[in-house]
Length: 164
Image (cartoon, rainbow, N blue to C red; front, side, top):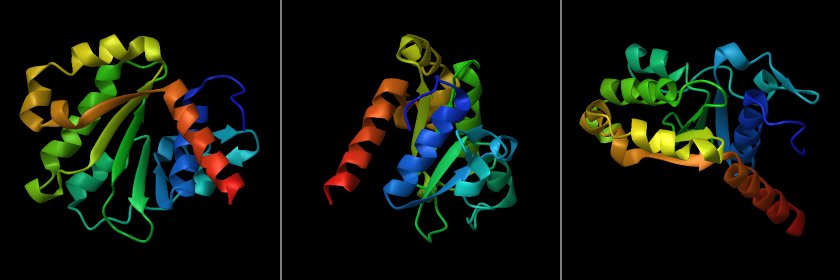
């Protein structure tokens, strides 16, 4: 599906579809489950609940993350994505930092990604220098993914499937 227009929902769909194509179970935040991209309702292509055994405090924060990837059938996530289409990048960073601060140390090897237009990279880099993100460890684990990079990753996954 080509981008009808860059939107928060379309970027979430790309992340969900890419996650599924790479063998993951995927999660989308409850507030976004009724959004549609084309004829696809986001809530129809994701998990009904977070399958983790983490404490309720961690799950409550995790449930609000835009998109999460879990290895198929496994209870621990591997990647968290916050789409910052029109909202302030600090919001996504704070949610991820909150999540990191609720986790026991052995579970901190997860990938955290802010997904936004390329023009927002310098803003992401500036926000990530805040002391709070160094303290929680987010500064060392969070990366930026532009919409164009995400679209290219998605196209590569489609090409791989077509080549089989």
